[in-house]
Image 1: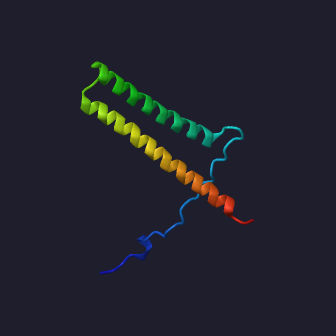
Image 2: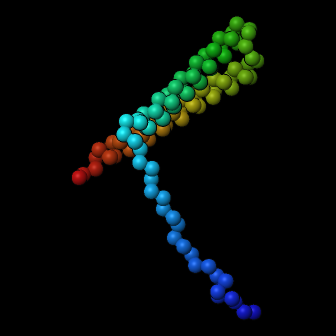
Image 3: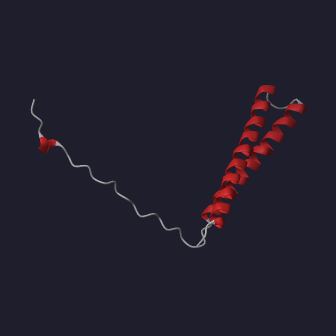
Length: 98
């Protein structure tokens, strides 16, 4: 069995794209954070509304109401975990020596 060496292509290093430079004043992180807070707030409001509608007898069944409340709780818990990681990263950066 003969191996055709010319058929083997060289391995090229991956192309590195230049990162997009954020324009000044866009507030990218602020916008993402505000959107996340808004989403968690809407989920909490939706859960409160689902419970109130269930208690009035106007809403979905108990199963759907509980799922809505649990989903809102999970969104809040996840948001708090992300917040804790951001705070820990900030504190680590502040401890760095120049």
